[in-house]
Length: 412
Image 1 (cartoon, rainbow, N blue to C red):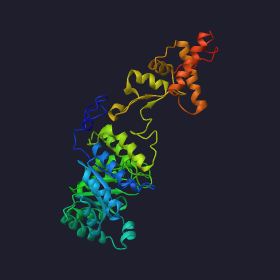
Image 2 (image 1 turned 90 degrees about the vertical axis):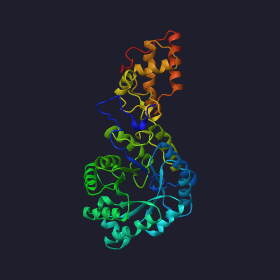
Image 3 (image 1 turned 180 degrees about the vertical axis):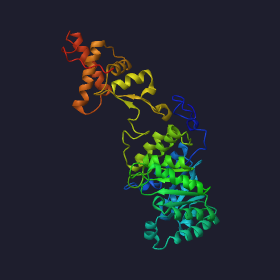
């Protein structure tokens, strides 16, 4: 299989661009930190380690593995993840305090994300102090972490509601204190892609720090906002597998990685063929079912029922698939149901080695279309074999396949 990270999308050259043209986008996965903050989600140490290994195998650049200030199992998991992960950088999430830095250092990680509120509302609620307190803490704690040998990213919590002039001061202070990156968090998911693009163009113009976007999905725009941030100059994206996270969740790893290549010609190191298994692993550990229609990893995203669609797909898969399922280690699936046509029925019968003439195929189609209306489920293989047997039995005793005027309309 072609290297997925540098794939040239050959099927539609006017739409797909070579993903190697621009610098790869760094992927910071926060499933084990922000993802676990989803209500009711709690991973065991073994589950965290298994997910970290799977993320590493899937090619993410960074794993934000937890919050060491929680102590106990959290620090044990962080230490074990840092020990077993081979390729990705393991990062601890901390508040902007020396005590949190110390807790992270004791786990053995070499990188931290130091988070600080940046909106007036959050600064007031968390620090009960003027905004200057934020700048003082950055100036004090970032050098402290650097002295501990830690690489530091400064996370601007609620940055989407911060005053632009103050946010500029935060970024400048982070850089002068020794941080290598600024993470802009749309903590409440209030941005739209147009505003996100403008924000990151402004940030890119004011600093040469790495810039990361962390988007929440409260109004369903986390993935779109993440793409806009990259277009505006973000070098890194913060994501969670299946979009797991607080409230409505975060930008989804699988959607962002694929959409960057599909719409922006930007590559990541993420292996598309590992995404489905990774999503299943996280969903099982989180006890959260993956919706059948969820993009990229849902069970139905490469399934087709419409007779018109299947007839075209059998001639040229690109007629109704913008993504080749093989890129994701998956297979195309044809589903028989109310909207099926003769082509789909004949194809299914041929696949099973079941012979049927035109009249018999039409009667099978009639039974196929009636089945989901009566049962509220698609036709399974056993159902189709039964329909074929019933139609064949009628033919053997000389009965008409269908009463006159009841033949199903041929939708291909």
